[in-house]
Image (cartoon, rainbow, N blue to C red; front, top):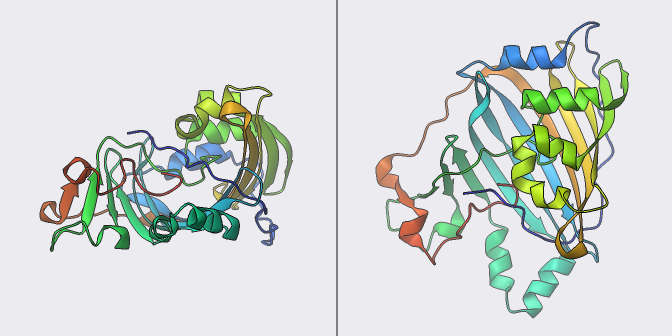
Length: 279
């Protein structure tokens, strides 16, 4: 099941970068540092805010935090909490359409555990449809979630491409731009979400800033792009992710079998696709 972006309309940008830039040691290759960190049983803590804008004051934001577990090739599991918020204009519009209750449900918090093949989702929105003793809905054949919806720097190929397309690298701060068509070719995460957007003209461009630790590991990514979406619409996306506690021991425990029902067993009662705007 492919993870998709929910089309909405937004206005304001994310906050200015406030942290002082880290200084990566001379000669350290961030891609090499990342590969060295990709050890089974180890991981990293993440926290991000994303915002999506189609104009006219209608938008949503998503806040996510949790942990990501690694294998030799990259992310293999995660355990995150997330919550979406609609703009006042969007909420008002949904109310006029008689969808105020839908909006309220969509804004409730979620916990999502990903095994790399399936997603297990829990939250208040399922309270009325799950039988007693069952707390989780399993969505099979899912793609892995992204630590940053635009620039997934936990993918070595994506990090390498970002470094190659840099416009400046001063101390531990790397700035650059990359075309969406190029990003589709190297980033499975980006391709899953935006392949359709990147194939329209004019070509979309993602701008980004990476902040590196003295060890060369990414501590923060801010990225933004104006993606030319279907039927001529424009999708403006901004995302800001912080990475911390690199190398922490990670164990992602899946829910017990008796606590889980599959999405197809609840068809018509729960969303068809994995809830969460960036899943």
